[in-house]
Image (cartoon, rainbow, N blue to C red; front, side, top):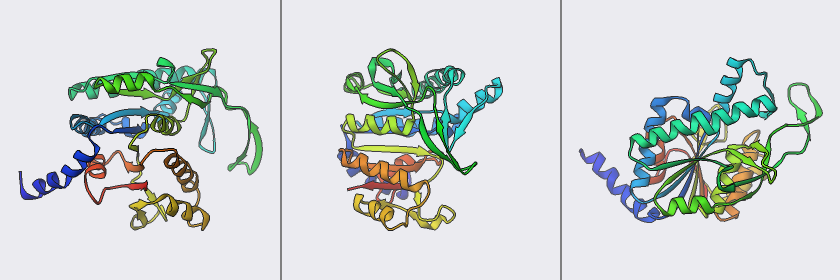
Length: 295
C-alpha cells in the first residue's frame, strides 16, 4: 500500500467513526444495474459501508430493463414527459423485472461479497401503502397540447411502514426493496423509485439518501462539466430555483430534495453510479464526487 492510499484511509477514518450505526438509503437506477461488471463494483462499495457498521437499505427501479423487455415481447409503451403509462401488460412485466430479475441479481452480487441481504418489494410487510394515481391534465411536450392522462397502474405513496425494514437492519441484514406497492385491496402499483427511496429515507430517519444514476450530480449547465455543483445548502438550492438559475429537470429535483431535507434526512447526494469508487469517495472524502445537498 503506497502513501497515497494510506492518506485516503486516514481521510476516511473520521467519516467511518461519524457514520457508524447510522442509516443510508441508496437508490439504484436501472442504468446502474444493467451492467453486471458495474453492479459488482458498486456492490463492493456497499459491502465496505456495511462492514464498517453503516446500516444500508437499497431501493431500486428498473425502467430501462422494463422498456427493453416490453420491446422484446412486443408490448407497446406509452411515455408522456418521461412518465410511463402502466397498463395491465406493463404491470405484469414490471413485477417480473422489479421484484424478480433486478432484485435477485442485486442479491446475488451482495451474496458474492458475503453480505446477508433480503429481497423485498414494497408489497412485503405492507412497506408501501399506495393509492392509484388519479388522471391528470398533462402538457405534452411533443404535441404542444394539454390532455387528461390516465397512468393506469401507477401509484402514489400514501404511507410508508418501515417496521420490517427496521427489524432487518437491527439484525444486520441489508434490505433490497423494489419500487412496487399495493393498496388496501391488494392492487399492485408501479411507483417512482426516487419517490420510494425518499419516503423510506424520511421514515427510517436516515442520515443520507444517495441517488445513484448515470450523471455525476447537478450542473448549472448540463453541457459544461465544469459547472457541476459540489455542495448546496437548503437555502442555496432554493435560491437557485427562485432566481431562475435552475432550469428544466433541475427544478423538480431540487424541490423534491429540499422538501426531503426539511422532513429530517440530513443530506442527499446525487452521484454517478457507473463510476468506480464514486460512492466511497462521496461518503469518505472531503471533496466527494457528486452533488451533496444538506445543512
